[in-house]
Image: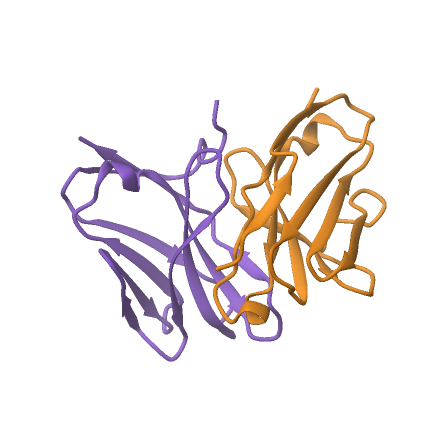
Length: 115
Length: 112
C-alpha cells in the first residue's frame, strides 16, 4: 500500500489569504488527485494533477482559485487562493490506483477553516 | 467538533447485528467500485472493491453486492462492532480515467 502524507493536517486562516497544502507519496505515481469534502458532504474531485503538464480541473473549479503544482512523480501542492468561509472544507489528496496496481489511496486530509 | 457525516443519512444498528449500507451509482460505464470507511479526522480508508464483471465479493466480515441492472451497490457488514461506526462512501471508477466519483455517504452508528 502507498503512504500519502498531507501537510498541514489542519489550519485556521483569515479570509482573503491563501493556503498551500502539500501531498507527498512514498511511491512514484502517474496521477494525483485533489478532492474537497465540504462539511457533512461527500468527496468532490477538484482536479487531476499530472507531472509535466497542467492540472485538469473539474466543472466548477478553476486554476486561479485552486492552483496546483506537480513538480515530480511523488509530490503535489494545492493552493486555496483568496479564501472565504465557503472554502472551509477538508481537502484530500489521492493517487492513481493504476500506478500502484491497487485501490485508490487517500491522505489523511487537511481540515481548513476560514474565518 | 467533527463535521464529516453531520448531514448524511444515518443507519443505527445494535452491536452484533448485521448492517446493510446501500448506494446507487450513476454511470453504467463504470467498471470498478469501491467502498470506503471514513472515521472522524481521517481520510477515506479502503474496505473492499468489486469489478463490474462480478456481482458479489466477500472480505473479512464484509460483503459487497453489485446489481448492474438497477445500478445499485450494497455493503454488508456482519456482526457489526462499535469500531465500525463511521461514514461509509461508495465510489465508482469510470473506465476512461482514474478518478473516482463518490456517492453521498451513510453514517453508521453502532449501539453497544
